[in-house]
Image (cartoon, rainbow, N blue to C red):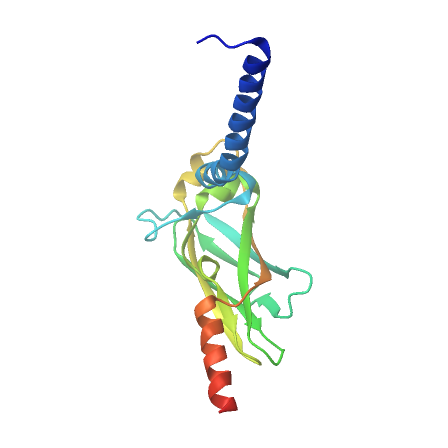
Amino acid sequence: MAMDGKTKTLAQTLGVVVVMGGLAWASVPFYDWFCRVTGFGGATGVAEAGSDVILDQTITIKFDASKERGMPWEFKPVQREMEMRIGVTGLAFYEAYNPTDKPVAGQAAYNVTPYDAGGFFNKIECFCFTEQVLQPGERVQMPVSFFVDPEIVNDRDAKYAKHITLSYTFYQIDLPEDYQASLETDETKTLN
């Protein structure tokens, strides 16, 4: 079946639209995967356990905290920096406080600088992996367990890093559905 000129042009245009839409849809997960694999853009690695190799060389880890505009919490690192041997598992804490009179949910976004070191900074456990809900007046210390991969000393660019800065930004999110449902149930009981 042969297509006339207008039908062929329409089919080609629709094909281009579908391909471009598919590429646009796939670009976000592909970029996320690319950043996690390469450490590009300050993305970190995630590990099941610490490193088996510990070097005599040390590196300074600095900790930074910020909040999205309008986020009502107070949020800060408990310690500003630590010096540690490359390969040793470190444990740091961030503190969050909800000064409001209602529960507030938050999620942390993170990055590592210098970007060359991002792929060598590995988190084992982190508060950033899950949503956080703080009750009115609640103050918590949230841990992050991590290590710097000893392979950093063999990387062409990252081996010159003398310090790595781990930055978190907390932003407010909607309360989880199951949490919201329990609040509504409690309010109903109070009214009855």
